[in-house]
Amino acid sequence: MVKFDLKASQVDELHREISSHFLSFQTKNNLACPSSCGKCCTYPDIQCSVLEAIPLAIYLNKNEQLQEMKEKIQNRPTDSLCHLFQPIGSDGTKGFCSLYQYRPIICRIFGAYAHKNKSGRYQLALCSVLKQEKRNLDSIEGLDFQSSFSYWTKLLDDIDPYLAKDVNPINISLSKAIELVEQYNYLASSENDGSVQVS
Ligand code: SF4
Ligand code: SF4
Image 1 (cartoon, rainbow, N blue to C red):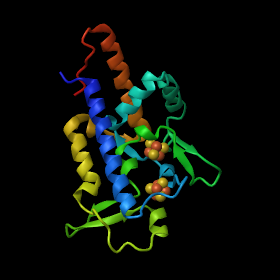
Image 2: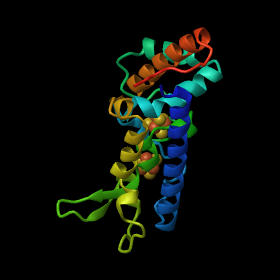
Image 3: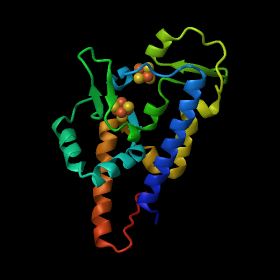
Image 4: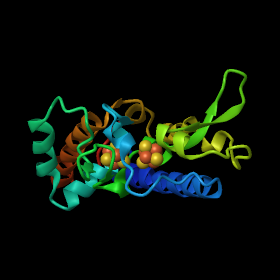
C-alpha cells in the first residue's frame, strides 16, 4: 500500500528540483523568458501525466476550488487551451499561469533545454521566442543529460510508473487527477489510516 499523499509530496519535491535546475541553467546562459510572455501556454493540447497534476488537484481540494475547476473542464470539454492560462491583452501571446507553482514538468523546462541529436550529442533546443531574441549561443553551460526532458521524466517514472505514463492534454490529466483526489477523499473518510493504493 503506497500513500497517495506521499506520492504527491514526492512530485512536489521533483517539481521544485526541476525549477531550481532550469532557473540556474537559463539564468547563467542568459536564456530567461521575456516578461509577460505566455506564448507557449497558447499552444493547443500541451501534455502532462496524471501524476504531475496530482499536487495541483490536492491544492484545489484544500482550497475548495475543486468543484469550480471540474465545472470549468466540464463546460469546455473540447477546449485545447490549458484552463490555467490567464491571457493579458488581445494579441494572444501574453499572459500568465494562474497556478504557476503547480505547473507540470514541460512548463518548467520548455523554453531552453538540452535535446539529444541523432549522433547522441546534446544540443540546445529553444522555443520560437527565445530563438528570435538570442543571438550569442556559442558557449552554453550545462548542456547535458540533466538539462534534458528525459532525465526528469525518468525520475517521475520512479515515483509511480503507471500514473507517470498516463499522459494526456493538461486539462484531461487534471480531470483524471481530480477524480483520484475525490476517490482518496472518499476512502480517507471511511478508513482510519486515510490511505489508498493508486497503482
Ligand atoms: S500549466 Fe500554466 S505554464 Fe503550463 S501551459 Fe498551463 S498556463 Fe501555461
Ligand atoms: S518558453 Fe518561450 S514562449 Fe514560453 S514564455 Fe518563455 S519565452 Fe515565451
